[in-house]
Figure: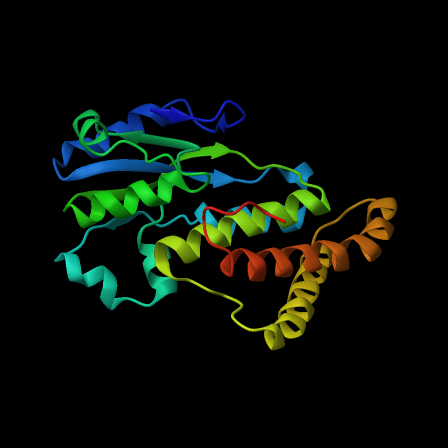
Length: 222
């Protein structure tokens, strides 16, 4: 079992629910659903929901090794999704395929390697944890930088490829964050603070995404 110390189990049978997936002898690992902490705000909760908040169980397995390269970069990243905030890994697979020494996204790298080796990955939404983090503007930039640096390295995924895409991406991010903010009841003081926070966090997200995808994985964030 891999479990982050700040992840809060949302049911008493979490470990049992994950481990029962190993009845299928082809399953290398299973990971849990995440729920963002409400006090961390609508944007963070939405991001958690998008990454690992689906209520639909999913099994990933390749029919043949070339299948992964036949997918688009975005499809490859989604197919290899795995998160070690709360997960279970078969011991024999762990011994054969330990996590590689990577600065970030070692769980995605591991999932990609075991899938290419013929194993299966399970997303188990009935096992759930509450887990999210608040971040400042600089922390948001670094997180996006590291995430998209890894996604480019592993899957050749570049969500923002050219400078001309920066402004449309920024405006889209601002619009989506404002829509999320309007849909969530909050104190007036928080609404006022968001009038200047949303553009700054949106800029950090977009610039981190762009710069991360253009920087080799061995490099550090700016």
